[in-house]
Length: 115
Image 1 (cartoon, rainbow, N blue to C red):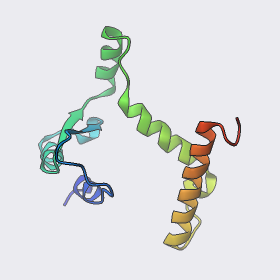
Image 2 (image 1 turned 90 degrees about the horizontal axis):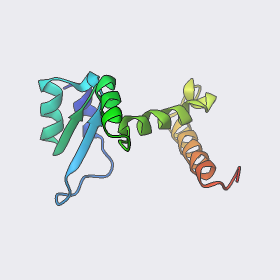
Image 3 (image 1 turned 45 degrees about the vertical axis):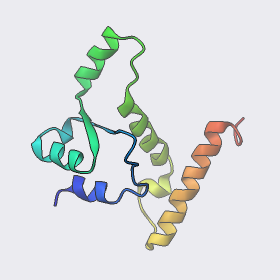
């Protein structure tokens, strides 16, 4: 079983059958095995390299880079040094700190803390 199968098997919120589910991925998920794993789970794969996104932005100025949303979210979590290097020994402590970091990120985005 590939890592992609494992990750997609751990989805917490199951997709509804009446809505088309899209999965945006980078060049690392290009190929028949990854495409089959994505479609088997009911997603429509969108695999693009960075060069393709830059070309799309030149053609269509209102084009939104969807992969950036995920990468910036990882960056926000990496700013919490205690999460970047995992010092916690128990999973419960690490999960609690992850939830706390997510709450702080949300509060910062809506302006409650630094408004």
